Length: 282
Image 1 (cartoon, rainbow, N blue to C red):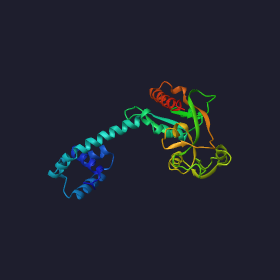
Image 2: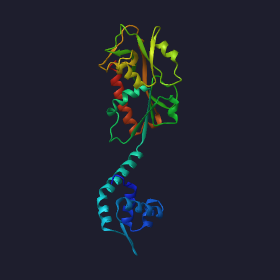
Image 3: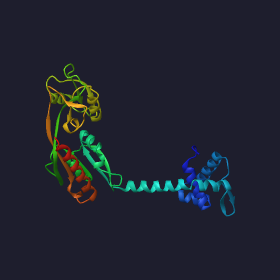
């Protein structure tokens, strides 16, 4: 039955249980003529009649009764899936807006933030300005700039330190090239080169943080990474010589109007625990 359309089976079961095309039409929301065509298509594919048309309505044939019984478990499973889907879509969605490197860290520790049984969903988004939270109140923002205005709750969760790393196998004596990071077309190349320092020779540009990390891990060159990521990778070492180290604070920002919602409170608590634990190791 690999070539049988489940929607045809679903309509067949409606006709079998309601005894008419019109009844199945009302329940399914499609026309009686379409119901009839689906039954005919299913009969052609299976090579046997499924119903006998009588004065009282549609009655299952012997083959139709067998099909109805054999698809009973399928119908129960489909119904359970539909209920589960509706329940999931009704769950509140909380956005976590953060820089790519923070998203990278959070996604690799997702079990510390969320579990399938949690009564909420998560969406990872690009970092936004704090004023964005005035309109998107279900957003938790992780930013290096403390907001100075707005109805916002702000807590500092640590200091993000960065320095240059390379793969252990990278020949730092012979090779002196760098991997640059330009997440979008508007990102200023000059600013990144200035950050790396005079004499930095960039031979590869990465447009995503995942690509940047993968390139460093594969030995393509040096790159600036957060210490929390570089130090955790046993295959990486701090690069010798020119090393543009930097440090910046991290703040967790939420809208004060949402502070009483249990799902917001739960996710904020987990975020603070994970990030404070990660950045306190620096």
